[in-house]
Length: 122
Ligand SMILES: [Zn+2]
Image (tube, rainbow, N blue to C red; front, side, top):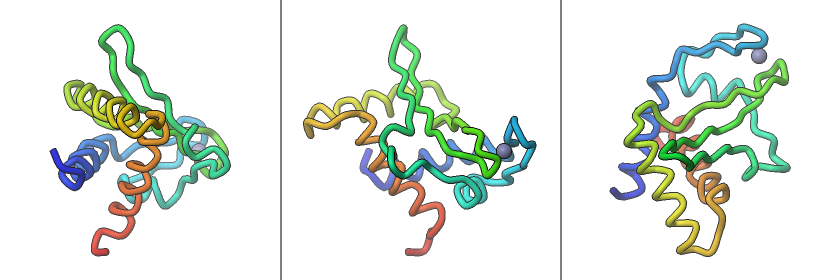
């Protein structure tokens, strides 16, 4: 799977998670794009804003963003378990290949996804 295909697939998976509400203030995010517009990441720790799960045959990547009420919202990378496994494996292997960390690789991917969702025509 090339990178563009991968990014498109992640976006279509994450889209299925919306609409979604902040469990703290109840704010509703109607779409992935609206969620990205209305939430922020903690820039000083950009690559730490992930939880990468890879244990007991359970795979997921949770991207953490802050609601305007300051509570943290965790968004899974996909709804499909097979795709989650594929993605975690791919990111882990890419990190090894580049002598980097899975969180850094996930951060690069996240930035590309955000760019694609917020500026689809660029
Ligand atoms: Zn909130």
